[in-house]
Every structure is written in structure tokens, then in C-alpha cells.
Image (cartoon, rainbow, N blue to C red; front, side, top):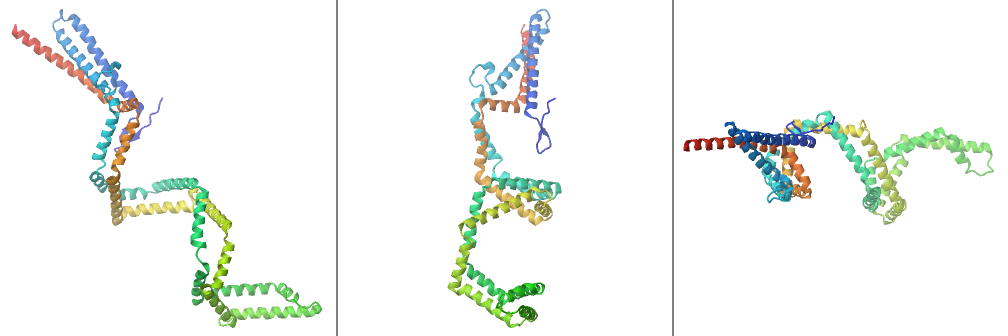
Amino acid sequence: MMVIDQTRVPTGRAVPSDAERLAALRRMKRVATSLLVMAAAVFAVSFALQDDIAWLGYVRAAAEGAMVGAIADWFAVTALFRHPLGIPIPHTAIIPKRKDEIGATLGAFVEDEFLSEEVVVGKLASVGIARRLGGWLAEPANAERVTAEAAVAARGVLTLLGDDDVEDVIERLARRHLFEPEWAPAIGRIGDRLVAADQQRAAIDVVLEKAEAWLAAHPEAFGRMVSDRLPRWVPGFVDRLVDDRAHHEVLAFVREVRAEPGHPLRLAIDRWLAELADDLQHDPAVIARVERLKADLFDSPRVREFAAEAWASVKQTLDEALAEPAGELRTGLRSAVIEVGTRLAADEALAAKVDAWVVDAAAYVVRNYRHEIAGVITETVERWDPRETTEKLELQVGRDLQFIRINGTVVGALAGLAIYTVATGVHALAV
């Protein structure tokens, strides 16, 4: 059994597939042709017996009219799509001959009647797109679908992006915004603000805390640093005394500095940092040294490596995050979609703004590009092969046109019967 796929139009009514249309067209052609054959058979029998049976004259007249009507309408319907019996009679095969003109007319009709600004704006204004879209997006299943499709599209974009091109962009941006400006003045200004706000105190406290912890935990290592600098002729017990004393004094000094906020060492460090911040902003020599250091750190190969590593890291992270349905990125995006949908459905002011944006955008597109949009129809029809065009149109309307043949057969029979009856009556009166 062949399964026929069906699509659905907005009304919910099933739209037949081409296979179903073709089967229906052939079925109606057989019905119309069978009526013609039946009328011909009735005509042959009644014509042969009408001299013996008087009332068969009426039957013959009806059958004769039915044949004339059926043949005439068969010719008319067939002439739309092809030459009847393959004979190139003038004004037949109308559709294949005038395909381009039909396409142009159809395009112009769509442009004038469907793509006019008044029609589009009026329809969109009455639909309430924002509320409908919001209600649809607020459903978790729909939000998940939007998120999944967005993730697939984003991963596709990541795949299409050329690594070399992206790295070039990152490198140019890094050079323009990070490396070309002078660093020293900016660092100096930041240092000024930090010193003025005593923000350096926290950093100094951390350094002192770490120094105290290390001295308390490693007295032997500190002692070796001291004793290694003593003359070799000094006895060993003296080395140990010196090591212990130096360790004790240094540890006590660090603890004193930590405990006293106004310690001279702290104040000296504060003054030094303030002077350094000022030099970074105003001393040409210091500024030049920082620039040389920057140039040494970020020469061309290193910048390129930085760009490649940054892009590779970002690309991999995004790809993995987009591929994971339960990941934070997809979950956050899904929640954002639901929130947007909920707001659109509940917030009348926001929905009105969105509707206005949509209407304005549609009006702009229609106003400026409706000819190009309608031109797609004309160009598409022009590209169609005449035979294919004929087949497509016949599939769409051919079944209904067969009813013309059937109606022609019935009307012809009635007309033939009426004409014969009137003629017989007039002849009888005349005699």
C-alpha cells in the first residue's frame, strides 16, 4: 500500500498530494469519457430504430445533443493544456504558449491584491502577533523547540566560521584596543585611585600574612639563607645562633608590621606606590620602559597565538554548551524564551510595542520590496518547463474542469431534446 503524505493548511483541512490529485483527475476523465461513449451508444441504437419506434426520435435527439456538448467541452478543456488530438489548431494549448504571460499576470495580481501596504498592515494589526507568539513561546515544549533549533543554527554558524578569519579579527581587535594604547598612564591612573582609596592595604596584608606563615613554617630554610652569607671561618654554633636570632627578629618584624596600620614600612610602601603611579602617568622614561616591556611580551607571533588560543577556547566551550540539552547555556536560553513569551502574553504595553514594530517592519518591506517579492512568482513560472507547467496546473484544476465536460454532456442532451421537441411540435402544427 502506498502511503500518501498530506500537509495542512491554516484551516486544518487536508491538502491532497500530487498523487491523489492525479488519481482523482484520471477518475473524472474516465467518468466524462464514459458519458460520451454512453451517449454515442444510445444515439447509434435510437438512430437505427427511430423509424420503427417513434418516441426513439426524442432519445436520439437527446443523445445527439449530449455528444455535441461532450465533444465541444472536451475540446475546450483540452485546448487549455494541449493541442486536441495533437493537431496544432489555432488558439489551443493556451497555457504552455502563454506561460510567461500568465506568470507575469499572477505576479502582478499578488503584488496589487495581496502585497499592498493597506492589506498587509491591516491584517497584521488585527492578528495580535505579539500575544499569539508570547502564548506559544510560554509553553515549555515550544520554548525547548526554539532553543534546540537556535542551538543547531548556532553550532552550524560556528562550523561555517573560518578559524583563520576569526583569528585575524581577534588579532586586529587585540592590537587596536589592547596593545596600541599606552599602558603606563592607564595603569598609573588606576594605581592613583587604588592608593587614594587605601585599596593597596588589602594586598599588603595578604603579602605580610603569606610571609609570616612561610617564616613560621620554614625556619630552617630561612636560616640557611642567612648562614650561607656568613664567612666560612665562623664556627657552626655561631651560625645557628645567628640563624635563630635573624629568624626571630624578621618574624617579629613582619608580625609588628601586620599588627600596626601606621607602621613606617606600610607608610613607605604607600608613598612608593603613589610615586610609582605618578611616574607611570607623567615620567617619559617610565612610560617608555613599560611600552618596551609590552612590546616584548606581545610581539607578533605571541599575539597570533593568543588569538588562536582565545578563539579555540571560545569555540569549543560554545559548541559543548550548545550540544548539551541540560547544560547551563541551553537551560538559561530556554528560561529566557519562556520569560519573554510570558511577558508578551501578559504585558499589554509591551505586546502593543512589538505589534507596532512588526507592522512597521512589514510595511517597510512591502512598501520597498513588494515588486521584488512578487517578481519571484513571475521568475519561477518563467523558469518552468512548458510541459511541467501544464501538468502542474492540470493537476490543480483538471479534476474540476472535467465537471465542465459532464455538465456539457447533460446540458447538450437537454438542449437537443428541447430543440427536437420544439421542432417536432412546430412541424405538426404546420401540417
